[in-house]
Amino acid sequence: MLISQISGPDGLSSVVVRDNGEARLVKGAKSVYALALEAVRAGKPLDAVIEERGRGEAVDLEAAYREGRVMSPIRHPDPAHLYVTGTGLTHLGSAATRDAMHKTVNAEEKLTDSMKMFRMGVEGGKPADGKPGVQPEWFYKGNGTMIVDPGKPLSSPAFALDAGEEPEVAGIYIIGDDGTPFRIGFALSNEFSDHVTERINYLYLAHSKLRNASIGPEILVGKLPDDLHGTSRILRGGKTLWEKPFLSGEANMSHTITNLEHHHFKYDLFRQPGDVHVHMFGTATLSFADGVKTEAGDVFEIEARGFGLPLRNALKLDADTPTEVRAL
Image (cartoon, rainbow, N blue to C red; front, side):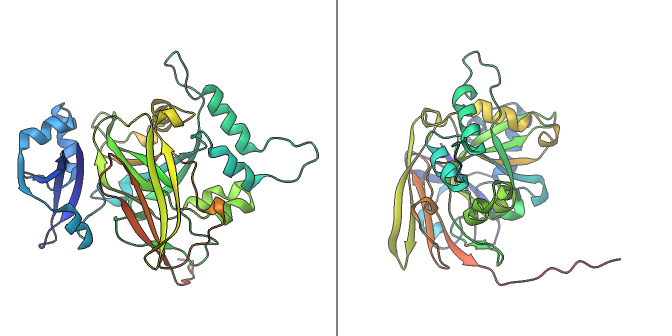
C-alpha cells in the first residue's frame, strides 16, 4: 500500500491511497498526520483505518504531480515538531566514498574515523541475539521547515560550497500520546548535502547536513524490502547528465533497521507525543564521488520499484542574504 498527500483547487489537502496501480482518495482524510494519529489512538493498523474510512474518487497522481499539487507525504501542523535526522556509513560500500573524502596521506596508513565507524557497523550493527547493536553515525538536518515538496526546488544557500544529492530510504514516524514511536512507513528521500564542506574536515559534517531535503512522493506502508534496487540520476537541460543504481534494504546494509531505530528513539527528546520524525538511513551512491559538479536548474530524480512515483527536485542557488544579529 502507498499513501500520499495532494492539494486540491481549494488549497485543502487530501490523502491518496493506492495499491495495484489504482489511486483513490481516502474518504474524509485531510492529512497523513491526522490519519496516523487516528490509527495510533484507535490501536489499529494504519491500513485498517484506511479500509474503515473507505476509498473515494479516483485520482490521477501523475497529473497532480505535473500540476505541482503533490505535497510532501508527511507534514506536522507545527513544522518545529517535525525532526529531520539521519544515519551515515550504514550501507555496504558506503565507506569507500567517505574514506576517500576524509583520508590524508599518512605514512602509517592509519584508518580514518569513517572507516573505523563503518567497521564497527559491519561487526556489530546486526546482533544475532536481537539486542541493540553498535550505534551508528547520527546527524541532524533540521525541522519541518527544511522539507521541500516533491517537484519543488531544493535551495542551496549562498555560502554552500557544493549541492549534491544523496538517494536514501527514510523511515516516517509519529509519536503516540504515551511516547511510543510508531512507524508509518518508508519513503524515498533526497538527503541533499554539501560534500565539499564535509571534505574540508570531518568535523564540518554537521554544517554540511543543514540543508533542504525532500521525501516521497509516496510512503510505502509495510515492510521495507530486504534487497531494494533503485536509480539515482541528474538531468541537465532535459538530458541525463549522470545516472547510477543504488541499493538499500537490510541485505545491503551493515545495520538492521531495528538497530538504527533503537539508537534514534532511545533519547527522550525524540519520544515527545505528537511529534513526527523523518529518519534517513544512508546511502552508498553519490554523484559527487564521480566528480559531478551540479548547477542551478539541474534536476535530481530518485526512483525505486515499489515506491511509486519518482522523487524529483530541481536545484536552486540562493542569493547571499547576510544575517545581522541585533542586541536588545
